[in-house]
Length: 77
Image (cartoon, rainbow, N blue to C red; front, side, top):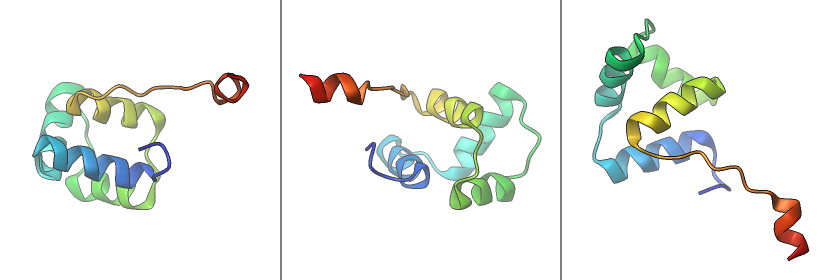
């Protein structure tokens, strides 16, 4: 999934977890006390303007890890 936009990655994860954007929004609101609207969340995803911390929270809700891969090290192997 690392060659896709964050929008595509989130949409794929929502699909794989059978969770709607509304469900995600409600869980973010409950767990992290987010004050923005569902429309604002949708817009941030669609415009790829989420903060890294927001992506981390979404990954947590969807039970995904964000993984940093040392590409330089991989190329050397």
